[in-house]
Length: 274
Image (tube, rainbow, N blue to C red; front, side, top):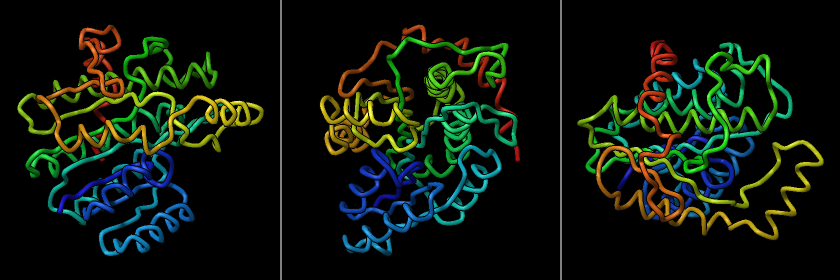
């Protein structure tokens, strides 16, 4: 029996991956902010006969303190982890600043994944073939890190925020591999393509537009998670892996620049200390 943690596991692809491993007889702890969605996930686990193998941890993943609490709860719950799946993401139509002073998209898409990745490494390293899966937009080259304004106080827009956080998440994978050169844990940056994983966090009229586009062009969750599951179950190589669906990406992409990854790690490494 393997053990997994899925952040953002009450919606979309995270939920799909969590339910897959529960059906496979594994243990899964899901982290999310909505207790009602957490209850529905646990009810579904019970219908699968997996109630004793499923757990829900409620947390506001835009908060550094909450992410550190999740790390401690997972450490108390498990002796080792076979996988950590990072999918938590939402859209913020207006700029929201977290109590830690971060722009909320950056906090959820980068900071949370940064803290959980590094914070749970000790448990992952105790597993035979551990893997961190960061579901993101790797391979996309639009957007940049606004080094002089990471919190986007001067130039916020939802698209700018999402693109910056996406590029930061790419760099997280690069920095993680550099910080753990001898680790067994693989770090998989995975771009699943356009997936019909819900649009409830979008404001109107964008919500309706995205739902119509998803109905016409998006893959269902069940199809999008299949390449991820295959890579989790049999991860190739070591260190950093970057894939667009089933296609490995060139590690020399400018969005995977080691110097930029180191710079961002240095700017945020203090977050790992409670």
